[in-house]
Length: 104
Image (cartoon, rainbow, N blue to C red):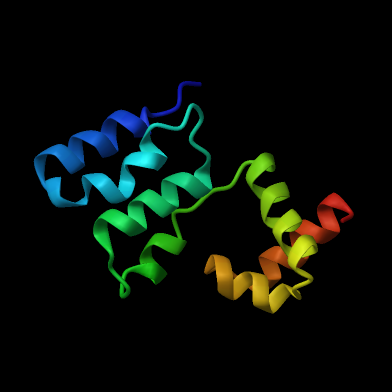
């Protein structure tokens, strides 16, 4: 199954609608591999909407490498599930489920 080319999508959006935000997103767009976390960060930098977090939260999906990076972040910074959930803007029950599922 093919993934969308997020690099091309976001660079077109920046070029057409938001040329002033090119410098802020340039480092992320030129990475060799864009993870889901990178895509979410680019999206946040471009659109900067605080009130749409509940809507966009429903449409997020994470692969195992993203899950492991989130759980590593929790482990390295010695955070509990609630703190990690607040940082990544997700449910603490999701973090608990991932920890149980992957035995971290």
